[in-house]
Length: 247
Image 1 (cartoon, one colour):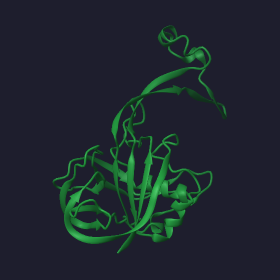
Image 2: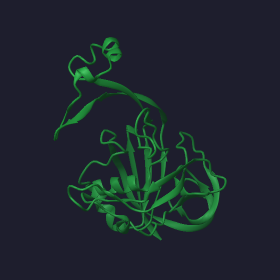
Image 3: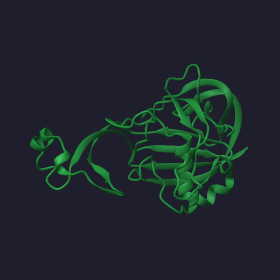
């Protein structure tokens, strides 16, 4: 069958871990399927759902990863307004050690895991989206708004169904024997169809998030929904094409 193969690249990537709110911000090893829908929606200029892509698959790689130091501004809600935290509320020991930092506005320093020079190979079953990548309405991002991405190319390829092959860094349903990775519980998608209201998460699934690598490290798997792309580097190269869970 035919599918759309899109190559996206960037300078940096960081995908929020669902279980970490404060402290060092770790990234999930690869983007979630809701992240991918967000990137596609940015290109389309509209909030797309799983029905707009049909099935979807991907591989995610990077050159390296590390912890980045980032500055944080502290804010608080006062009445019905959001304003900088008053200097007197900053612990005295912090004001004494970092007096120059808190002179104008209380700030802090945190660590965030970042993937450098990310590369995303995205496979989409809906060929009608090709024009959205040719002239994107907005800039797609690898997680945060500052992690901008650009589209290297978008082309139509043939996907041949196979029963086994070597798979690269992706998000695959748990459990998948023989594949290392971090087990995560992630939402399939978010609905953003109500203005002024929080987004509504779709169903949650358990996945194995394979670690992105700089080298061509792949693992042999045997499972349903495996396909060999016509533009693959080797004959045993396969991708997992994800079937959306029922709402």
